[in-house]
Image 1 (cartoon, rainbow, N blue to C red):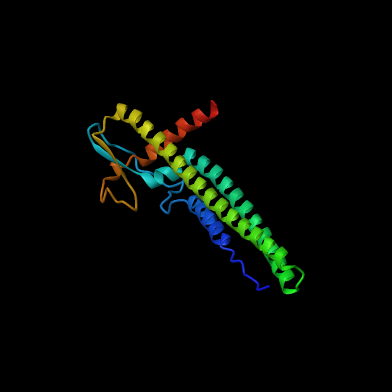
Image 2: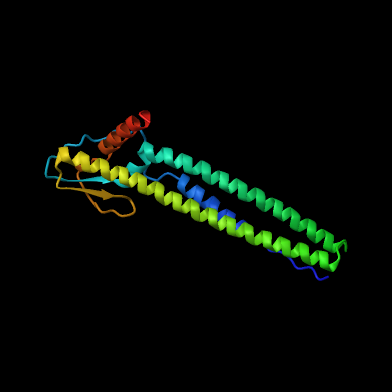
Length: 203
């Protein structure tokens, strides 16, 4: 019987899942050190202030807790897929070895080959589904974080009455230049974390 090689494209999908886990695990490049000296905010009611959203997010305890849980799940998914992929690879090599030694009838070889091809397809489908689910969970996670930030800012501005609160980041540069006194990032970080800790401790 002519041997038909089986191409293991499942590895590429597993790698994509791993890349997703690495991406979410990587903190923003401009994360401020906890010990960095901050400028006291002196903005007045009616001012237009701004915050650095990328810095804010990576210093927000809620985000870091959710991210840690997400990373743990993504790692578990990756490990499970890799384990199944290694088992499949081993079974393919065993099958090809039997073919090379003439240990299988044509009918038995065709049945085993069809079964292996189906397993390969199932693994690819599972990996794609898991990757989709992780991407969806990541999106929901970020929506939760941003919703919490927006809710806090709405309450915060009831007391401060700023004309506008802008967000800027290294990627967008909405605020090209602004007085450090109008940067409320650290003040918001401290308020968000205090709120989150209270909420978490009461659960």
